[in-house]
Amino acid sequence: MNAIVALCHFCELHGPRTLFCTEALHSPLPQGATYGDSLGQGEQVEEEEGGIQMSSRIRCHSPADGASAESNSPRLKKSDMCEGCRSLDAGHPGYISHDKETSIKYVSHQHPYHPQLFSIVRQACVRSLSCEVCPGREGPIFFGDEQHGFVFSHTFFIKDSLARGFQRWYSIIVIMMDRIYLINSWPFLLSKIRGVIDELQGKAFKVFEAEQFGCPQRPLRINTAFTPFLHQRNGNAARSLTSLTNDDNLWACLHTSFAWLLKACGCRLTEKLLEGAPTEDTLVQMEKQADLEEESAAQECHEEEEGQPRPQSEVLEGRELSKCHTESSALSDCSWNIRRTAVFRSLRHMRQVLGASAFRMLAWHILMGNQVIWKGQDQDLIQSAFDVLQAMLPVGCIRVIPYSEKYEDAYRCNFLGLSPQAEIPPHVQSSEFAVMIDVRTAPRSNLYPVLFVDDEPLSKYEFVVTSGSPVATDRVGLTILNKIEAALSNENLSMDVVEQCLVCLKEEWMNKVKVLFKFTKVDSRPKEDTQKLLGILGASEEDNVKLLKFWMTGLSKTYKSHLMSSVRSPTSSECRN
Image (cartoon, rainbow, N blue to C red; front, top):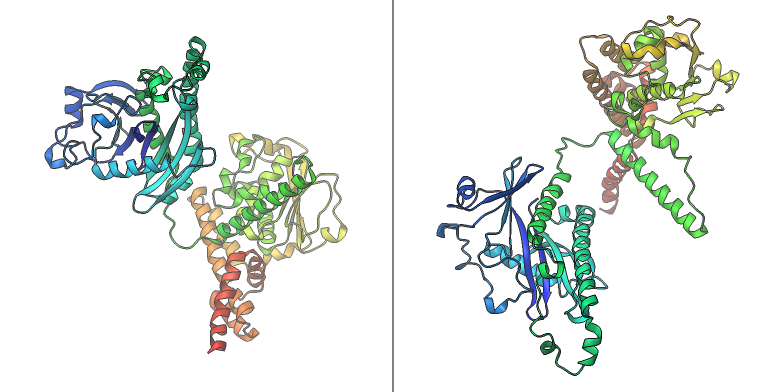
């Protein structure tokens, strides 16, 4: 993380001062202070933890570095510093930690040695302890600009029995040039810096209580109310933070905390390269997530207005369960993997269990948008089947009710799990727009051969696949189904390859759906032109046309609104002309 973490203090005599700062050095150490030399000539290794090696080092700079403390940096004079303004002694070498994994060095001293960084930290220190303060003068705040960097600042008080109001004012600031990165790191920085502050305040409070018990300052000050305040403190106006906390290893501990903070904050956010536009599955899932958040927020507001406790939501259960199939990894990485009783691992596995003919019938109905009804006692088995089968459809086309005690209409769900006691209406059983899988207890344990060692639960079940339109599987149509079956039957292809094949096939046919949507819904072309287009797309067969129309319902709202707005804008501009 390219940032600087600094501890600042508002001195009653000298104003805002920087006490201690830690920065990350990505380049090699300056000439004359290499890693090997420094270890041998003045560096003492203290500890090694989590890949970071901590040590003290005497800083050596050559004139060519342009970072000499005496010549270039606007250093503070000794007369401008007191015990409260100073952290490390004049001859202290500072601290350095070596990250072996990334070859980054975390260096701590009272001030940065680079003159430009010194100016940036100095300005951020002054602003954090003067004008950029949250209400109450204690808490986090964000400020900054492109020229001087952006700052996360957390101000706080430390108890001191000799200070005005019995407390002194400090701040911990994090400075970096990347505004977005710093804002996204706000929750992480706030929690970790708050922990450091709590530890400092806890140590100082113990010292404060001990001093007040030995020599209470409040009655003493009341008795000497007319004595000038600065003189009555007998030169104790400034006290170091190590004195206030009674911790001689304070700066070494702060160096460790600040170095870890820079490393951890840099590791928690990573950049991902996205090639091309987001897929329709991604867009639809983002829209569903936004809808869920809006519903949850609205429900919370409604309950707060009525003053009722928030009940457990059961309405969103089915929609939340559909999240796991958004990507191709749903075939093997969904939540059902943690359940030992879930037996279906992949489409190929299901095809082996059901048989090629029954699986083709089931897959045909799924791709066409017909209702798929699984009826059985084992809810985990039915859920695992849904998790596997949903990989064949776009996310926007999936509506799931995992398990129910009564039949639900097809407009509510195209994947329905029913208990054995649930009754299916006769018109649904004879309908050509539904397929039913009855999970029964097998009459003998070896009805289905054990395909793998972990598939023993399969031997307990018998799967009966029925539909009112069994001849539909004999049609030549559904090009995508033929390709899916070819991939599943090819044992030379691993399931990882088959999963990627499914993703490519869905994207291919979703692109055809987009073209057909724009051609028919947006441009309103005649039927003759539509038939020619279907021929060009290779989807002129009846089954393929029905599939395209069903998949059209899975288009994202984002794509539809963008398409409609892009079509309207040229027309509106022509009208204005």
